[in-house]
Length: 47
Image (cartoon, rainbow, N blue to C red):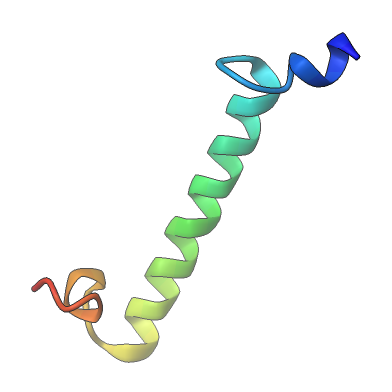
């Protein structure tokens, strides 16, 4: 049971997945920007 508790917080497992998801989000945002011709902020209505 202690194994599942170590997957939360600033542990290597959580930080690895955080980095992977951040890279995925960046690639999706860049792809969307290239397909639509609008920046991310303008797509959200902020720019």
